[in-house]
Amino acid sequence: MAPVLNRPPFSPLRFPLLWVAGLLGIALLVLPPAPPAQAGVFSFLLGGRENRGGRVPNRQQGGGVRAGRVAGGFDATLPYIISPRNTFEASDRFTIRWHPVDGVETYTVRLWQWQDANGGRQRILWETTTSDAAVVYGGDPSLAPESFYSVEVITDQGVTSDLDAGCAIAGFAVLFPETRSRLEADLASLNPATLTPEELALAKAQIYLAYQMLNAAIDSLATQAAADPTATLALALGDLYSFAGLNTLAAEQYSLALALAPDDPLWQAIALEGLGELAVLQNDIEAALPPLRQAQFNYDLADNGIRANQVETRIALLQKAQQLDIPPTDDLEVCEAPPG
Image (tube, rainbow, N blue to C red; front, side, top):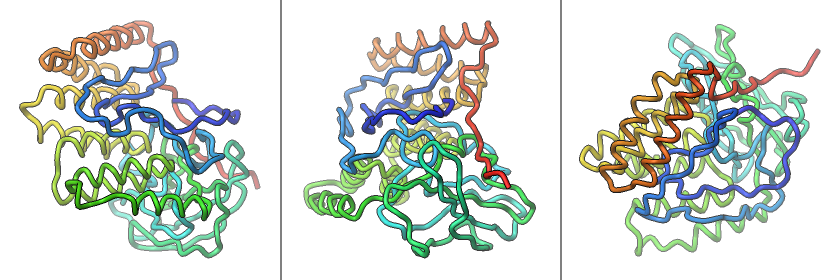
């Protein structure tokens, strides 16, 4: 989806039936976005949720969360940012993580301040060098709540994370203290005694997403998935990684869901649909069509004729785009340093 350079009106973050959808919001030029699956397995994140942080738009540049898949995270030769990316952070003390690149011994990490949601980067606030693929930012200098920031990582060979597709919309912001207090109260309201570990992880993720904390939601699910991987968690992580622009990680989770639920046609369909849409995101319609066709077949097996018909329509539109030589996904802007 190409970035919109004018600041959009306020739009609360919404993820309808995210975990059973496997597909949301791919911009296809003349093609409509694919609708979510109506699997009805469970209602995690069903319906609209308000951004209780208050004044944050569905950001395009400089930070915040966008509903729908975002390009990025495909190129293993880049130290693309994993976290914070397309998210809010609870405070200005957090861990910065990026994709480790083979053969690199040291990385330079820079924290950029942005002019605003749609303006360019203004200045470097902080810089450090490390041999690891993660570093802790300790809040010095402090970051203003709901201002816009982004991270850049440069390898010792001069390769920058700025070359990652979607870099220009992969920033972050920090919650106001009062918003963080409400977040903590919401998390404390959960009763672990009444929930399974998976349900608790999903409930925490739901709360984090209500505050547009995409990275925290991912961490909640990934921690539980590391202890007890399930197809449900894999599908949820596949969607969230793709919404963050971390699409190699998304593909891994969709493939894991296929392995974890070999006899469940619905879960198979959702995972295959996700893999097909990742190929669409790379403008590879030829690679997208086989998993989408198989997804359509599996939706029929699962007696979900509505979704099967929707995927069939999706396939027809992609085939038309292929015939017309129309790329289904616009390239996203990479980051650019300010002049001088």
